Every structure is written in C-alpha cells, then in structure tokens.
Image 1: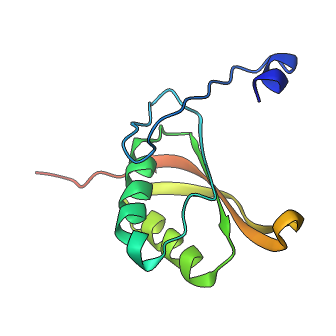
Image 2 (image 1 turned 120 degrees about the vertical axis):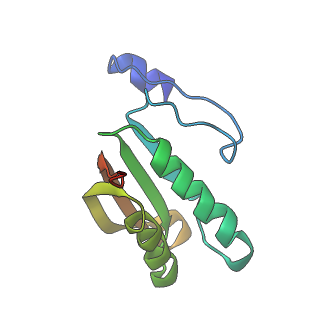
Length: 122
C-alpha cells in the first residue's frame, strides 16, 4: 500500500492497533472495515458497539466503508444500527462484489457521514 501511495503521491497513513480500543481521529477521511464484522451471536454486542463507536467518531464528511460476507441478517443488522443513530448518512454504494478466490460474494456498503443531529434542549 505504501508503495502505491508514494507512486500516486497520496497522503496515506497506516496504523496497527486493537481496533476495539482504537479512537478514530477526526482527521481521518475514511475508515475501511474489510471482513471485520460478522454479527454472529457471540460477537453481536461487541461488534454492534464497535460500529456505533466508529460511526460516532468518524468526522463529518468522512466515509465508512464496510465489506462483509453476503448475508441478509447481518446486512439488515448493520443498516439498522447505522440508521438508528442520530446521524445523517449518504449511501455511496450498497451492492455486492464477487470474491472468486473464496467462491463468495461480499456486501459492499459505503456511506458518507453528512450531519449529526442533536436533540433540542430547553
């Protein structure tokens, strides 16, 4: 990745960390979650809390890109979590892509954070 970034003169930084404890800095334009979320029974709460935190911490205008194995239940859950937040999202991509190496399809869900809603407090 760094070689391509240098050739294309892109400002790309990669970091290694425990994603469940990593704070998403407001300086990031994009968060890529590739094959991280499965929403299996034993991981449902942990992964749901994780996606809520990442979505909340992502800066306005930032992209949240999630790639996960195709599955109606997990896709429905992801969208339910995202849509249940007080954030406006613009769907950039919501489609499937083939992954021939594993004879599978992945759901590609890319959303852009538009605006955060706050309750009116008097």
